[in-house]
Structure formats: C-alpha cells, structure tokens
Length: 287
Image (cartoon, rainbow, N blue to C red; front, top):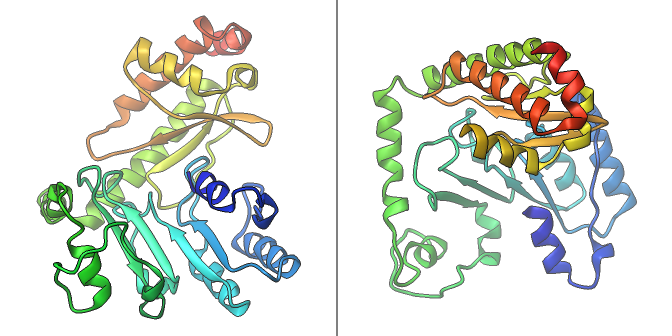
C-alpha cells in the first residue's frame, strides 16, 4: 500500500521513486549500507519511507539508524509502524523520524480505524487533515486540526484506552510480548519440522515468524492457495515467494496456543497435497 501511494503521488514521473532491495537474512550494517548507497546515488531524494516491521517477510528494521543516515543527507523520514504498536517496545520520539504512523487493530487489540499519527514539531506545518475545521481542541494548532474533523464515528479512537486497560488485565505488555514471541518461535519450529523444511526465518522478539514450505510449493505460492486454506479449513496465513523459496508468515496472538500451529501444519499439508498438485509429491512425503 505504501508503494501504491508513492506510485499514485508520482503520477507519470515514476523515475522519481527509488526502491532499495535487500536480501534476507541481512545484518543491520548491510541494510544501512544499501540505503546509504541509494542516497548517495540519488542526491535529490526528499523523503524516505521505511517499515518499522516489514510484513512479508516479517523483519524488524534498524529504523533509528536509518533515520540518522537519512537526516545526514537532509532527507525526511516516514516510518510505517503498522506492525509495531503493541508488538514491540516503542519510543517514537527516540527513533527521531519526522513522521511515524501506526495502527492499533493489529497488535494493540483496539478496533480498526484506531491509529497514531506522530509528527515532529518542526514538521507539523506540513501535515493537515483532509477536513479543515477550527472547532477542535489541543495544546497546538496541529492537535486542534486533527481533534475534530467533522461528522464521523470517533468510537475507534475512544476505544484505544480500553484496549490498554485490557492489556493490563491479561498480564500487561511485558507478559503479552513474552508469550506471543515465544509461541511464534516454538510454533515456527514445529511447522518447519512437520513440513520437512529448514528452520524458520526468525526475527527475535517478534510475534511473527516466516516458515519455508516444501520447494515444490513454489508452483502454487500465491494468495490463491492462502484463500483455499481459508475456505477449506477456516484459517488463513499469507503465502508468498521470497528469494527462490515459498514461505508462510504466521502471527501468534494472545488467544493462540501451540495446538493452533499443529492445526495449521495439518491443513497446509492437506492443501499442498490435494489442492496444489504440483506440490503433492513433496508434501505427501511428510504427511
């Protein structure tokens, strides 16, 4: 969606966009070197956008250091923290980005439509809501603009405090994060062992794990296979190709347990064997 937005903004001048591709696993220094090289080769860059936690595959990026090297080149930075809020410890001012956005419905347990827009004070004059109103409240003009944007349903915003209360009731942030990250690690290892593939691609501290599928699954490695899994077995995981291999990205939530990973393993084997003929030989060996 970020790339689609950039594509839309650029219109017919797509050469204005530069995408930095990295291989995984990569060290933080390798990622930083790739971005630094792209900045050196494109000195007219005005804005850089990075995911705090990428979606597929799920990996934490060194965002604080990325911000530093971009600011050395006078490049503004937008951090997309869609998967960060509620999944990892988060100190937005410490990161130093010019703009940080995150939503609450993925990992904070608040409703869809609840989100954070954080803008550094010296950049707030650049950002305005799409409905301009002067009836809001706030300690700054920036807050005033966004606090009331006309007739809409504000219940998602108001529910964010209830989500924080709920997190405390079930054990608090530290216990939640420890549980889901440990479950992702154990569940990912179980999936890989059951599927007969190498160990999962792990980013420590995340509740998301990338598990390789049998090599033959590359022939049906797309969201259509994920949809068949949903229709046939009532469960869903993103299925995607990455660097010549097919992966599933599995998210561990507080309501999950290891038995859910066992169920996913059985259903993946079934779909690969019966709904993806090209992968049947590889999957059936492990079934």
